[in-house]
Length: 401
Image (tube, rainbow, N blue to C red; front, side, top):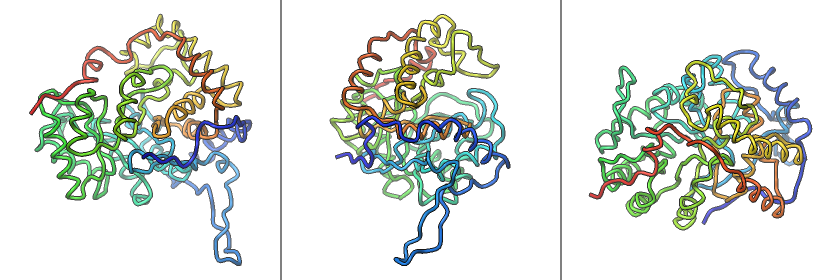
């Protein structure tokens, strides 16, 4: 029941890859020269031809890396690669250049063919939604916005007070989201984490009512328990499940992906680049800056970074082989797994945005994909993916009603 508009795994091709990095660097310089300026159009309309249809002229810098493919999460059509915005408030991996630059980055993503944008009330908190709302307001009818509820966040201080998915809280949260996102509807609303105190049927009924009101169009769950997925889907069909997934963390393959395939639910990958690890920019000598939350992740300890370097070497080898970058290999591998899988890499740099969407051009033959799958499977990953308190909140089953 899932439709794919562009196939990620087919005959091998290196088309457009050789000049990618220099083009991305040039684009980063030219497009971000004026902070906060509206992004230039990757295509400009030329005078109409005799047929009455306008011809299109490519931007010399960015045209070769404009994303064209789309995928389906259930009935929801999105770009094959989305954009995560969790890092844009500047309090996750470290400060960002400016808020205006983040707005410019999102608008440039739209210009480069990205239609799927992921945020949450907890990112910032609230600031990521505000950035997304400001950036996408001129393009609202052309994009898909996903956000998440589920935390009890003080609206004045931003302090978290644990989870809260009680119906009345969900309604208040959604009203706040609509204001921050500067829209009258949310395309895809997730429960950020399963609330162990609230039956999922109560959550699903509330979202179902919000859908009937037109405030929400589709819904999903993030890092849920398997039985909770079935129970939620029985009340109000789910459009997507969002879990961490990459060559660094393949946990969803055992049970979550088969369940999505059985029920016709799309799958969205957060941290599809292992929070930067699979890009090849981290090593055992990496030292995170003050305020970078990755320091708390067990797999980012010095010993575990060293033990996990065989994966980076594998991706680097394939990058040379395919005329790509390690990040593009990881993203292309994800998209080759299923036609209804959509990665949402988060970035605050234009060069990385262009690199990520360029993964669309990296394709594997069936034999290549089998070879890469087997090589990834042979590598043992050391260290938990999340701190203990965060890991305890994944795979949770909601109580019965």
